[in-house]
Length: 315
Image (cartoon, rainbow, N blue to C red; front, top):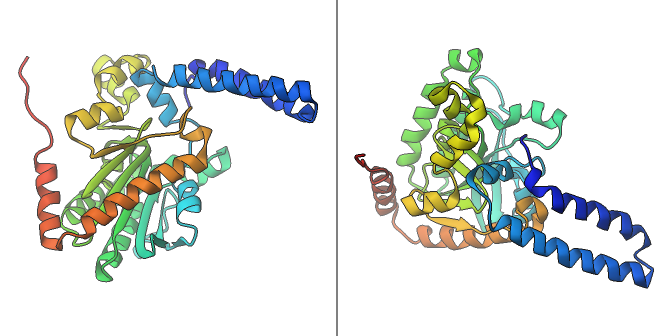
């Protein structure tokens, strides 16, 4: 999962606070805990205001970072999961289903990584097979049939690169999602909540609005993959991260995302409830804005949005 040495002072303080909390009924201990909490807030503010791209990559991959289902439990409690692609299997790396948000029915689809080893294996570490993307597309088409907005949560290191996935048409499944999302008649909001890696992320990312959590990353390739290709050395991943422009601030500056959703002090993993609340506010605002547009105007704007991305620079 990476090296989190920059968080060491925070971890030490959290352990000390936890140990002292056993005796929090004592006035002197309670006072000591309050001072430690103030110190903790100061450390978090100092550390998280000066993260470099590689450290932000580590935060995006943090083992305790909230995933799709963590957000849904807090902002869309009536989420009803739908399963299967109706062709091959039900891919556990992608979850999706109907839910109520702001008193309206929406379709929610997202990558799911899992928290512990058992869950990560079950979810294939959030790396979907073709049947996962075909399930996602089936649900998008269902939403279009009933004129319901689509909200996607992006959190994957990339599509699964196994032999079976290639045999079942991994690249075709991703390409089909890109084409169909580009012309889907209903509103689409895509949110990068953790890792947004390569085509595996983009297959859920062709939206009217692209939102990104403050300490998420979004890139054509992982830093390790980039380093392996360019320098034949995955150990140079930190250097690659600095050159990939994969942070939310970088991508906002390049016009590739529409908004950065701020995270609680210390990152989303420090406060699930506050992180979910900040995401909910942003999602609500953007959904209302794009729902007010006629579908043909919306699809035209979406198409032009992606056509304008990228530019050529000499030197």
